[in-house]
Length: 155
Image 1 (cartoon, one colour):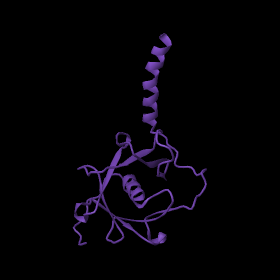
Image 2 (cartoon, rainbow, N blue to C red):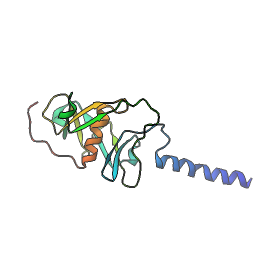
Image 3 (tube, rainbow, N blue to C red):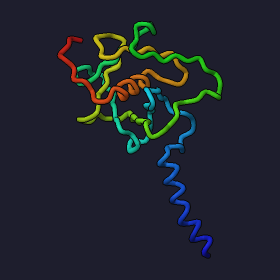
């Protein structure tokens, strides 16, 4: 009976440890290395230090991100042709910042308008099997920190 009580008290701790690390989802999450740390997407909103959302209405955006078809013209480019399962993601450490993509916008989080047309705060090029354009836009805006306020622009 004592063993059952010990097991019953240990199981919630093990579950909490798995959730705290975010390892219950298989595979590496999209991330970018910046200096000594990294910025990584997470699906766990409570784990994220930054939250971004997307809009289809440019007037609601706080950050505009343009998709380019030229890597040389981009501020941020994601290129990979890795078929190997040995590909490594960013190392998670104390300096890792987590970014979550929210379904709804918040007053404090950046709202991204992703479009192939300018003007834009950031230009990105994505040719990847692991990153989507939304992932790359969320990472670059999340890595920048506080959102910049847009000046009035005609779309």
